[in-house]
Image 1 (cartoon, rainbow, N blue to C red):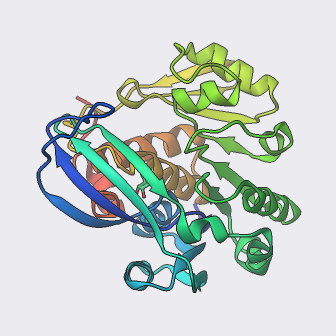
Image 2: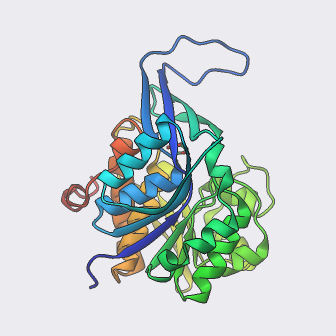
Image 3: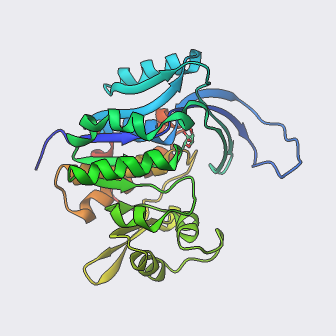
Length: 308
Ligand code: RIB
């Protein structure tokens, strides 16, 4: 097995402004919440931090604003041992902000102001080509412009680098992009949107994986929260049940899953083993509050009790 997987992450870096509340407010409702916290987040940065905690060598590519949040987030990424030479700090734009409500059941809503994340251009991605070239796996999500994602995928394919795309936040994607990605990891809502269905339509995992395969996707790993994960292996769709945990906050669970999957695959582990590690890591993360503070260390995942 390979040690020290090399992971490149292209994506968002946000400051999460989080209020805990008894439940998610209804449209038009003012609801009395509880504690307020400022927590480092952003799907890209969360993936980078998790991959680093799983012992990978991580390069982050993204954009911050030249403000107090940007400074603090950059410093935190560096403290995690992440190579930030391709994180641009841009004047005249604010750092990305996520306004998050976390309910007592552990669910959340997230409202995003992209800020500097929206300034990640294909040109900036090209400037980071060397980071992509040396990576075993490139991790992508959709909180940065699609043109930047498309450029990143082209560069990764030029250098024969495996691409894992978490299609979140959900949006339709060009089939040319879907065909180039090696693995996508949608949840049910995201999968529905990718195949042109209504976001809340009921999903039959096997049919969904077939539809995505017909759209050109090579490997779908469908994440279904507490119902576990579904993926194609040889001729069958495998169901890997979730690890039962008491949810405190699901924020960043998907990011943690993708990072775990990437690091294990980059180390040469088989897909089923990689998925189980990723599921354990994500399960641990939902037992803790916040995005990056909830992401476990590798040893914690490896020592986690088996399902039961
Ligand atoms: O996936 C969770 C993340 O989504 C949060 O940290 C928030 O910043 C949003 O980007």
